[in-house]
Every structure is written in C-alpha cells, then in structure tokens.
Amino acid sequence: MHEHSVNNNQGFGKVAVLMGGNSAEREISLMSGQAVLASLLRSGVDATGIDVTSRALPQALQNKAFDRVMIMLHGRYGEDGKVQGELDALGIPYTGSGVAASALAMDKIETKRVWLERGLNTPAFAELHDTADWQGVIDELGTVFVKPVNEGSSIGISPADTADALKAAWSQARQYDDKVIAEQFIDGPEYTIAILGERVLPVVGMKSASKFYDYDAKYFSNETRYFCPCDLDAADEKALGDLAKSAYDAVGCTGWGRIDAMRDADGIFWLLEVNTVPGMTSHSLVPMAAKAAGIPFDELVLEILASSKARAGG
Image (cartoon, rainbow, N blue to C red; front, side, top):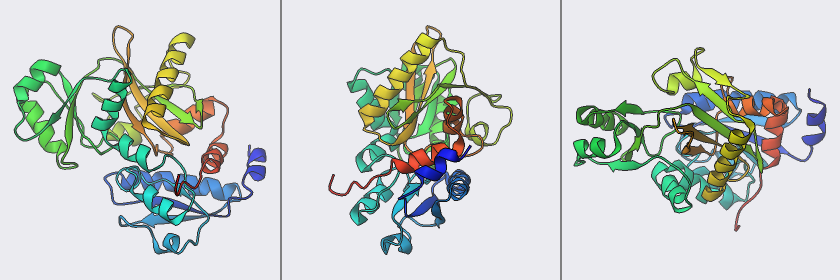
C-alpha cells in the first residue's frame, strides 16, 4: 500500500501540520490534523503536529524552523487567507489555495456572486440584518437555509419556512458571524465533489438520517450514508464534475478542495459552497472519493503535500 509513498516523500524536509485553531471547527481540525500527521509519519516524512491556539503563527514557523506546511486548520485563520498570507510573507510553501482564493471561498456571499457572474447555478439568497423584512424574504425565497457567511461544517445552519423561524435562525447564526445569509432550499440529494490538483475525483452522494446534513451528521453520526460510486449515471456525474471544476477554478482554488452541490427535482445541479481545507477524518469525503479513484489515504496525503508551493510575490 505504501510502496509509492517511500519514493514520493523525498525532498519535503521538515513539515509542520497545522491543526486546531480557535474557530468553531477546532475539534474537527484536530481530528483531521492527527489523521494526516499519523499518515505522514507512516510514510517516513519528518512531520510535526502543531496545535495553533491563537490567530497567529507559532514561533517555530516565524523562526522558519520548517520547510513546508500542511494546513489542516478549518474555518477562520485556516481557510480565510490569514495564515496563508503570513506563510507567504515568510516564503514557506503550504498546501491548498493561496490568499485570494481562500478569502473568497470563505465568504459564501462573495463566492456566490462570482459564480453568478460566470453563469454557474447557485441558489438564490438574501443577506440578513436585524432590520430585514423577514416575511419578504420568505415570500421571495420560500423555505431557506440560514447560514453564517464565514463558517463551514454546517455550523450555525438551520432551516426556516416562516418569518418567525427565519428571525430565530438568523439570531442563532449571528452567534458565529455578523454576516448571515438566507439561501433558497433545494429539495433533493446532496453531492460533494473533491478536486485533487486538476483531477476531479468520483462524486460522493450522501443521505443523512437527520432532517438536513448538519454538523453531527457530517462528522459523528454513523447513520449518515455515503455513496461512492453515487447514484448518478456517467453523463450526469461528468456534468456535475465539470460544473464543480468550473466553480473551483472561478474562485481561483489550487492544490485541492471540495465543492458541495445539490440536485433538484428537475435534475438541475446547484452549487452550495467550496471548501479549501476539507476534512480528513474517518468520516471525511475527500478520502472516500480518493479511495474510489484508487488512491489510498497515505498516497492522498502525500499528493496534497507534494502540491504545496511557495507563493510569496506571486
């Protein structure tokens, strides 16, 4: 299983795996980081796990004690371009998207605007404020999902189909972010599409036992069912893969990432969001897609690490 790994880990030098952080996704980041660290060590890479406990680079990185960085920080300071900018300034290569793409992908509203400008399907939405016309939003959009604009992993998300429910959902989401979005509900199956380098991996379909695919369903429930291969025929899977790659490229993502999408009753695909540092836990979807493509976990981790590059000045 690891015969390719031994040859591919040369030249990485000392690798820091950044995990933890202090975003709402800290727990999942630690799970992802530990899984990746264990994998790198199995492959003979000189890797060290670093629990980032504040929104600043650890001193060892500021002192340039590492040759490259594997970013496993989810949420703020991991996916929003901040840590990427600090690593750029130091000239230390890192995995995943650069500053601009990370910042854009983290903001659900700006991401959707970019997609709409490119003619890519994404559900209609409204930004919510304390002075919002709650009934007007429901009249216009119908049932919605209310989401913090700058959080991931389904944190702070809840559905609403009445004005009172919408205001309550906004109040809950606002605990995580000042910016909150109401997004039109798409009634249909959810899919996720992992992208590794320029390669679109097999689509994963999912079915949650809960009312919608929430945080617990995503990371801890053993009742959430995943399908890879999924239920799409070859033509539809290719169409969805092409749409996801277009969405990924439109945001400017590089290295690796994951696009979430849904399909309505008319068979139309709708883009939800892009994840620039997807989970790498036992329940995670990128490893599942990679496995379906014949890429074992340790090989996947090495391929992501190999894609890391310095971007200072570029």
